[in-house]
Image (cartoon, rainbow, N blue to C red; front, side):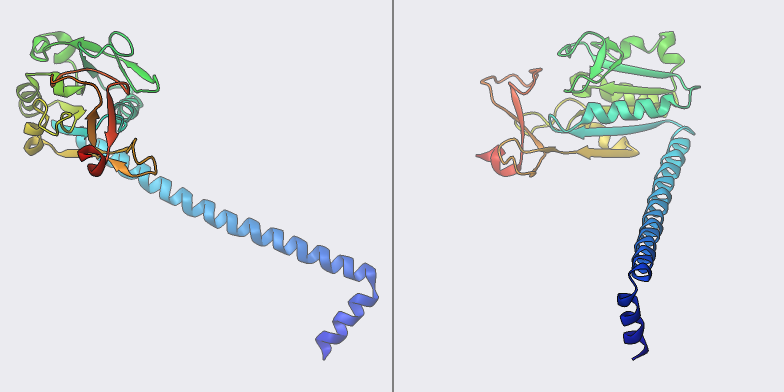
Length: 244
């Protein structure tokens, strides 16, 4: 009854009604700010946890040699992920980083590793990894990145020796298999020696509905296992469309 009388009084006094509406409006805004702040604070805590974990993993990896594999099919973002990690290490400032690409991969320029959208980082291009074992650039390197690793025939010996004997942190980036789903180079041989294995996926270019792709399907007529190409030669597919 008292609430009904108060409401009637407000309706009979426009000024009081306006003040009441303004009060409610401000209360809603304040509540919205509080909720948004809580959401922002929660997101900040999650970000802090992710960064802390990233830094802890980085510090742990710097304590000794290691082998880290980044593998996946064509167009799965392997080089992009490799460049992300390179940039993260560069924030430390004091670490000697050696970036290597296979000399046969010159699709986007000479002496660069490159994503398909042309993000690039300078590197040295080699046909043989062991050719730099006695060079100063290798001796001083603490962290080594190897892109298009499936093309190096001496990959296994180089990486295991670098990690086990020379105390190097080695990142190996390459295909999880060839276009016939066979092993490609030495990458699979490194699995038992790896501390970390990151398997990346693309999106099936035949489904085109967000279905994950893990296989590289060749769309040109060639029987050579080593055929450096782009989207005019390969597409990422799911299992169903690889087989059909």
